[in-house]
Every structure is written in C-alpha cells, then in structure tokens.
Image (tube, helix red, strand yellow):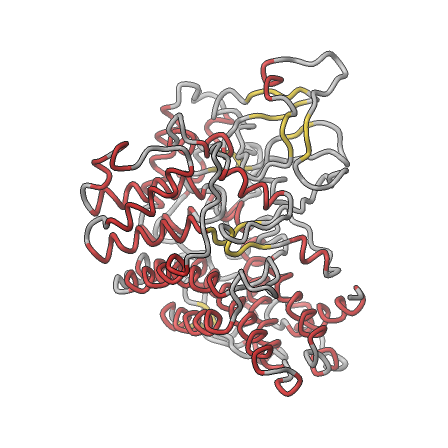
Length: 555
C-alpha cells in the first residue's frame, strides 16, 4: 500500500469532519472526489478502515491521554508533578475551555464521522454480500465504541448517524443517554452478527471481531445498569453477552505453570504480538504504522517506569502517573500481579534502584514497562561513577524512540468478561452464584491466589460482600487500563474512593504534611465535586459552533 494514497484518504476524512475543527468549518472543499471515488474495492475499503482506527490511536485518545490523564484522579493513581496542574482533568481543575476536553471530543466524533462516511460511501455493488456486510459491521463496531466512550464521559450528546458535509450539519441537539445507548446496542448487535471470530483463518489481529462486540456490549449494559440511568434490568443482558463469550469456549486466560501468565499477556502488548485468546480487542499501533499511518503512542512513556538517563535511543519514560498506595495495599503478598503492576523500580542517572515508598514521585505503574534490569539484584547495588547498570529493552526495537512507543493498549480482556459475568449474575440472582464465584476464582488462581471460599469466605456470604470483592478485584486486575474511573462512577463510588485515597495517603507512615509533593497527591480528592465531575462539560468550541447544544449546568 502506498503512503500517499493513505494520506489522501485521511485528508478526505479530515475535510469531512465538520464538527471536529472550527478551522476546517471555515473552508469549503474544492471537490469531494476523495469521498465519492473511494470504497469501491478491497484496497480502498481497507485504507478507509485504517483511517477510522487512526482516530482511536491519536494522542488525545488511546495514544496517550485518554487512559492516563482522564482515568487518573481515581483511587488507583494521580498526576505526580506537584509544580503544575497540566493534567487538569485528572485534578478536576478542567473547564469547558480545556484543550484535553475538546480534543477527546473531537477525535471520538471524528471516528464517528469517518465511520458514517464509510457506511454511506462503501459501494455495495463492488463487493460480495458477506464482504460488504463485514466491512459495514466493522465500521458500526467502531462507531458504537466511540459513542460508548462519548456518552460515558460527556453524558447526553448529539447523535450523528450521517457524515457531516458542512457547517449546517453541525447543528444537532443532544440526544438523551438512553437514545444514544439504543443506537450503540443496534450497532454492536449488527457487529456481532456479521463480524468474523478471532479464530477464523482470515481474521486480522487488532481488528474488531464477533466476541469483542459481545464483550463490549456487556460493558455497555453494565454501565446502563449503574449511574446515571440505574436501569437494573440491563444486568440480565450484560450476563447474557458475557455468556456468549464464555460459552463459545474459545477465549481463555493465559495461564502458565510459573504464575507468569499475567506477565505474558502484557508482554504481548509491549512486543506487538497477539494473544487472541485472552486479549479480545486492543488498539494496535503496529498495524496502523504498517499501513503507513504516522501513529505513535505514548503508552509506557507517560505512564511507565521512570527512566532518567541518556536521551534518544533509550527506553525513556516521563513517568507522570503515580500508582497509589491504595493499589499497592490491595494486593496480597502472594499476588503475582503486584510484581508486574507496581514493581517499584526506576533508572536514575544510570543507577537502577528500588523505589522504596509510595510517597516517592517515582512510584509509578510498571504495567506498561519499556524496560527491566537484566539482573534484579542490581536494585540493591550502586554502579561505579559513569557506569550504567545493565538493562533489557522489552520493546522489539534496537533503539527506542524517546517520546513514542509501539506498545499496544488493551480494550477488552477475557478476565474482564469473567468478572463482568460474576458481577451481573450476582445482581440478577441477588447473591453470589456458583458460576460467578468460579469465574472470580479463575482470575484469582491465575494470579497465584487461593480460592476465594478458602481465602475469604465472608466475601461470598452476601450479594453486597461479593460486589465489594469484585470491585476490589477489578482494581487489582485492571489498574491503569483506563477502566477504573468509569467503574467507580457507575457504582456511585468515585467520591467515596477519592476520600479513601486521601485518608490512605495521610495515613501512610512516610507521609509528611509539610512535604509539598506528598500533599499534591491529594489534589483530585480535594477538588472533586460530585454535582459536576461525573461527566465532562461540552467543549466550549462545540457549544459555540453548534447552535442547538447548550452547556450543562455548573459549567
């Protein structure tokens, strides 16, 4: 595939994203040949599809900000730069004019618009029926996914199902959340009916697939069952779609005899290989670059293991996200996930050493690590002056880029399906079920833990106790994967957990109330306002150019 052709497609997509950029809205395209002349054969359809995926790989979305800046400000982590407040959303200091609030909206709607254009312009007469349906299903899957994020983060939003051709297309009133979810359900349903299975011979890793649609639809139903809709009848539907994945009996946890299965899963993201049985859907930066798109993520850079030595060619990490003491304290001593998620090490001036306390600004997540020491015993030694201790780069490249990584980002893992099923079945039956307990145990056993009925029989004694256990288990399993804040919001727990985080910080034996760094960790909890911060404001730019969209109260 030629890069210049891809660039033409992407340019065509951008020209049509009328609501995505006010500068574009001020210009009238000279022609529309890039839209009307495309999507008439497989090559063009694949190029168009790559353009849709590229919006999800953008820096404002899964390339960097979305799963880090937006999900920080929960009980799992926080921004560690005490001297500035650049991560405004993470600190609950954002306004409607905030650039991050605007860019996330812009890129997710650009994904919607590109999907709409693809659906409208794909030439039905040029394809066999199955191939045509498969392309449409993939575009609808991506539209549903983008809308599921938009409605979760922004609440009632404009529902656009045709592509925006000019400024007049931009004036669309907000639909209710229920109306948006109705369309999401239709799109994901079409997707699971028409998309291939990940085990099919012609399936391309990194693309949408049948079971990903089932799993993400289960997540949508769990959200609908919680805050703000509180439509508890949706628990049954969430369970049913988890059943579709589980009873399919192809997806499974990565389990190894040495308790390294959890590590092995994340090594596939880091090394751009694919564990299709556990990783049901992920954002694949490698695929996008192979198609000629200049997409590079910062996964493992801003949310990785601190590296402060050298420059270009080293596995550098700005390490702006701290892991919280709540995460550390959630793990039992024998939990193998702790050694992967919060191993607590860094490189400082060539010296690889242990980060000794959660109050240290270098106590960062290690889930998306770019490097490790060659010998872990070096954590207890100090190199000679001018020497750098030996390390191994985990990314499959000889010379890492200082600012960008190729690490793929997980969207849906099989362990999530198991825990969603356990939660939904608990709600439907009003008590823990045998199957729900078994699903929790599968996740625990992979982590090297005892069966829950042996380790904590009280955790399965009641519906409430089991839900609390599942909430804690989701923290242990999915920390730093961009799920925690929305989980807490749908459970109605975000404010309470931020209070608990601050109490945990102040109760840490290493906390010093006179230390500005330590005090800065509590900013999110101090700034959070339940009356306004469970959703984002509409971007000021969008309210300015959409005559039918009024800003929310309190913003």
